[in-house]
Length: 309
Image (tube, rainbow, N blue to C red):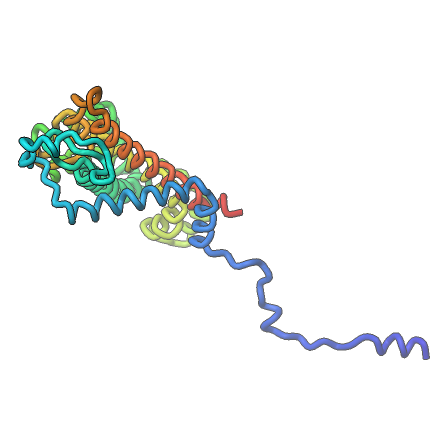
C-alpha cells in the first residue's frame, strides 16, 4: 500500500516539441550591442553632442549668412571694425567689419567637407583594393612594390606638389589629397585580410568550393568593421589637418574660398592686439579634431564584438 502511494506521486508530462527547441540564451544583436557600448561612454556622448552642434552650424549657418570671404564693404565703417565678442557679434568682427562668427562656420564647412570626402574616397578605394591585394598573390607582388616606392615619399610633399601642378580649387585639392592616401588604407586592409583568410573556418570554406570574392565579402570584411572604423577615425582629423596646414600656407584652395586654415592664417597678425580673431578659429578647429577622434575611437571600440561580452 505504501509503495502504491509513492508511485502515484509521479505524473507523466507531455512533450512539447516547440518548447524543447527554444533557446534560453539571450538574443544577440550586433548593432544594438554597438549602440549600447557606445552610449555607455559619457565622454563619447558629450563629444558627439559637440560634434553635432559644430556640424549643424557649419552646414546650416552659412546658408543664411551668405558670407563672402572677399567682401570689404565695411572697411571704411570704423563702427563695425574690430568689435570684440558681444551679444550682437558673438565672435566679434575683423578689420573689414565682417562677422567672425560667419567666417568661422563658413570656413569650417569647407574644411570638414574636404575631410569627409577625402576620408570617404580613401576608405572605399583602400578597402576594395586592400581586399583584392590581400587575396591575390599576383596583385600582391605588384602592389607591394608600388607601396614601397610611394610610402617612402612624405604624403604632405605629394599633396603640395600635386596642388601646384593642378592649380587651386576645391576638387583639385581633394584629388591631390586622395591620389596616394588610399595606399596606406589598402596596405592596412591587406594585412588584415591575409591574417583572416588562413583561419580554420575560411580554409574549410575554401575546401568546400566557396569563391574567394564571396569569402572576402561574407567571412572576412564583416569582422574588420572595427578595424575600418579605427582607420576612419584616424584619417578624418588627419585630412582636416592637411587642409588647414595647406590653406595656412596659401596652397590648394582658391583665394576666395574660406577655410579654417585660411582664416587662421589671415588673423595671425592680430594675435597680440585682437587675439579673439586668432584664437576662436583655433579653438573651433581643436574641437572639431578632438571630437571626431574621440567619437571615432569610441565607435571603433564599440564595433569590436569582443567588447560585447
